[in-house]
Length: 97
Image (cartoon, rainbow, N blue to C red):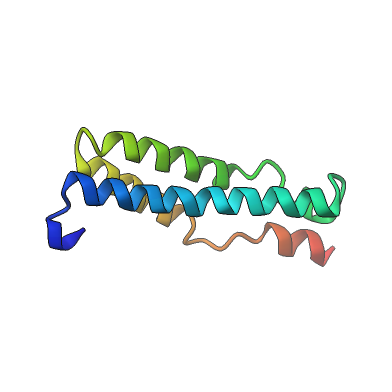
């Protein structure tokens, strides 16, 4: 993106890549829950997975906003990254009990 001065297309493609990673995480979580059962400790630990769903929603919004202003998309990418800076300890907490 930097070589293209954060142009519309590179920011859009970067958002699509981030979206695919977010969707892959979402699918992985649901596959693990399906394998272990809806009442398993893992399912309880993941709960509603708000961070995962919110990440995917922000990536979709950023892709749309890349047509308006690439800086808005970049701000959303940074926001999602900052959401995940704090480690997610849900699984550790449930399995430690």
